[in-house]
Image (cartoon, rainbow, N blue to C red; front, top):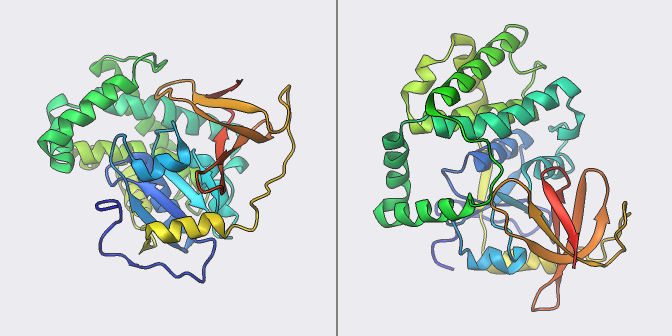
Length: 321
């Protein structure tokens, strides 16, 4: 699969059967959040660079209609949400505290950062700066493809539409909120970096990528915090081959995934899962687990092997077929 495997990485250590594999592209803010999480975890990880927009033939074999990036793979399990991915990493590294341990106040800030601020950063930016950044990363032809794809992706979305001025004010208020919190500690709510820090960092990382002057305009405490988060690094990424990815699926000892089901769904019932806000493409599979936080569907590959896709309950809808 030419162009899909990141160059300049080390070879994957096959003795590590549960080495996480991240499907990402370099300009993706949510991918940056998980790259930093992998750096915090202190473990080696497999890196697979995918296009910024579909089609992604290799990944689509596993995920069918799901199109958001990043996706984290551990064995036969694919985590289609950064919070679930973070918790999966916490399961293999004691350096991470699960995302679910946020207090109510911290969870409200996380949602604000990822829901409103993420899109406000885009709305507040100069369109010329955004286009310049995209053209540098994607090339002229890739830029047109990306813009067409994102236009289609946002059809029917429920994302709040803000004017440039209102969006800029929202981002300014967010930065002031962070500044107040950082007067109390080096990180948000703790002496060590955690999931909340990454969630609040990645929208500002995107803003500074669009306009390099953004970082210099931040209050000194927020600038220093941004530098501390960036210093976490991405850990040690390793080169992954297509064969090694399949080996992790077929070699997973937990192929017969068993879990509880809440609600009115029956085990192994055929369902579709899709986001409720944007990129509302659906993925179909057989439901094998569901609680108040996540659902897991099983998909059978043409080879006869199974993969398990993990989706959050919040922000997604599950429908019987």
